[in-house]
Amino acid sequence: MATPYSSTFPAEPPGDPDDPASVARHDQHAFERVGTMLRHWDRPHRRSYHWMITLDQHQQVIELSQRCQQLLPQAGLDLIPPESLHLTVRRLGYVDEVDPSRLRTALRTVRERCLATAAFHLKVIPLAGSPGAVRFSVAPWSPLLDLHRTVSAAAGCDGVDPLAMYRPHVGIAYSDRVQSPEPYIEAVHRARSLPLAEIMINELQLVELYRADHQYRWRVLERLPLAGASLR
Image (cartoon, rainbow, N blue to C red; front, top):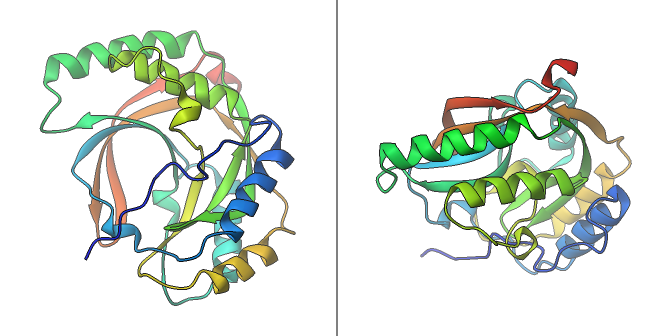
């Protein structure tokens, strides 16, 4: 039987979404209060179009994820491989519901906005989690919230407050069963002494996302550079 849970976790945003220490403390405290880890794959899923930041080319994030994964219990988790590391911005829509003209219009609008949006540095912080995953916190949120507003407007959702529905993060492992969180909370504590990674985000991707073998896979449809991307 599916066990639903909210994808907006923690329920409340951190006090200062742009301060790495504030974001890390907030996410870690929320994970420590999780009573039960749920099966991530019970979440409903259909092939969909997503705006994402893919991280398979960021070696610092790959190395940090692998170091953290080595600290996690081997049972009960589906580890996320390097090629599947990502930061979701927002779903555009389900493939069978988005017609080609809507897709082209959204893509054109977001591309124009991205060309006026500066590339930015992002700190990737070990380690916290949610009821269905173990994940990195990230900061600052402001440039990610701006991207969320951009893609929301392109989908016809003007005026959406991203803080009401969006919690930026990077998953490194998915819970594959309903289970106690204690072993993972303990492992997360051990990982917090590791140094964070800092990367430059210089493009947004539009992908076609699907599931296969307890992983998320995607096909990149478009890469949308941010202003100053050549400074990578």
